Figure 1 (tube, rainbow, N blue to C red):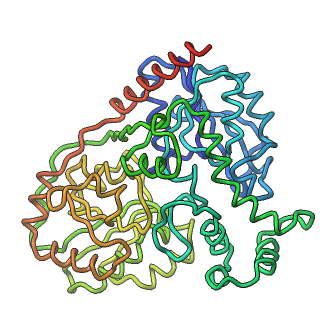
Figure 2: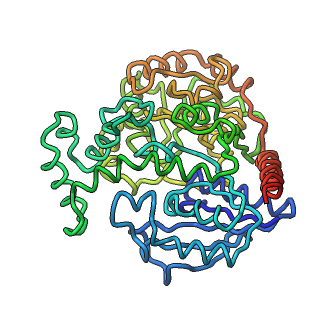
Length: 443
């Protein structure tokens, strides 16, 4: 079987999310005897490649790059529906002639890809890793910081999120004149004058329905959590299309050394250092604790949100160390030095791979009480949770754990996660077989 894997970008050495998942799926499919090509976007604004379409190879996986610097979006609509890419996809699909198309993220490809896949007669499968299909900011986080259920009937909550992102959050909350807001927004984003500022609102309002129609072209959609599946169902997607398929991880699974003694509680964070990841909550909690009771190790890139990182460094005390990034192959080693991995996210996470790696290496976790995390945690057995965005509750939990090392040690002995990328890929192949069979019957 020949599979075309479409992903929004492809830098698996530097991330721990969708890009890593795509590489894992690709390599496992190859080992199972399938032919795989990855089709990856390059975000506009990143280093420009020599042409719109270039080719490369990563660890034996052929990669086709589509550089959006050559076809940039010029409106909100084009971030989810870019007609200019239609002939590019048509030609690429005709060249690749896959037996199945698997999309691991639609950003940089947009819903146009799905129409072209279906028009060409290829079965299509998605792995959903966030809320892109119906949420404007992908995170189900409202403009006021609260968690969101999805677009309301008039899409006013989506408009508020966009205004916040454009730096006009105060106006979004206080309902100043829409015309003035949109004119300012249009100027801020530097869009062409010929495009009416009032076109912004229809672009946002039409987004959920346009993508919902495009997603109906999928033959199956996989979700790594029950919560993500249910969130799509609550927002009008077909339950028959949605299948839970847990992520797998490949990591050394030996028991953790009994390192914890009279020293400080070693708490780690691994991932994107961004406001919605709640790193500030973790650093503030560490500052509130008794001297020498905690050591905080922060791993992650520091150049994506430099202002936020600068603020974190100002907040941090001597107990906090910023340790940069590391190769995925070192994950087990890095986690072996931690007593607990903290995931203090303020948004709905969806089975982050670092969570599964922690559980697999017998590292208990401390997570925000959002469903995409807590469905993997048995309270007090393999981890603990605290109230989302509540620094006081996070501090309380960390103090209690630092004062009870036996509790942490016992949790480590009970913590495990056995699913591997091979078993994950075998599940995906079963889905491929089902949808290709149904597609053949329809033809």
